[in-house]
Image 1 (cartoon, rainbow, N blue to C red):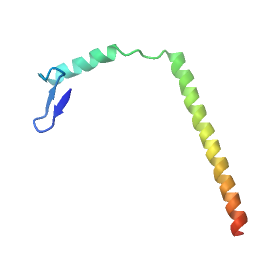
Image 2: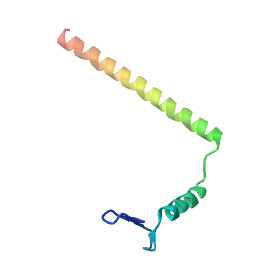
Image 3: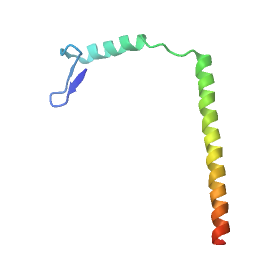
Image 4: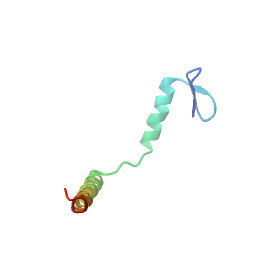
Amino acid sequence: MTVNKSVKQITGPDGVVEGKSNYFMRVYQELKKVTWPIPSEVKRLTSVVIGIIVACGIYMWVVSTAISWILQRFTGK
């Protein structure tokens, strides 16, 4: 699909100009083909993401504290 910005027309894969309603109908049809995750999978993957974020935060805090401690020892401040 291409959008011709100078004319503000939306063309489909076959090059035919589509109206807005036809465009959104095609979007809806494509969204029906999506395999959506089940709620338990969403909860599990969300927990994994939050765990990784917390682990990265702790890692950055440890590295920052270590660098700060090392610089204080060398500069005497």
